[in-house]
Length: 109
View (cartoon, rainbow, N blue to C red):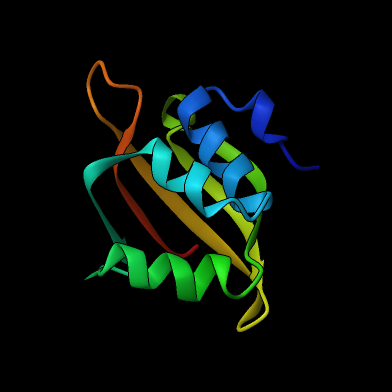
């Protein structure tokens, strides 16, 4: 059973998941702060290069399996055309008062 993005406890994270699944790069970037950062498997990456390669140019899709930390930590069945399907963990930092994500970390779960 998956959790739909609209049912996630943190609406900002839900909006980001919706943007990924709609393949809407502009909506995804609008949810991030201008100086947002990210890491993949513990290594900081160039955010724009990574999202293009791992999400938007490869048909990325997130099926949320579980959430914790008020909806800011997710276990996701993630798939894209490059790597297929894998179980991943995602952790989001939401900027205070701004309702935007300033950092996300992902990797194998």
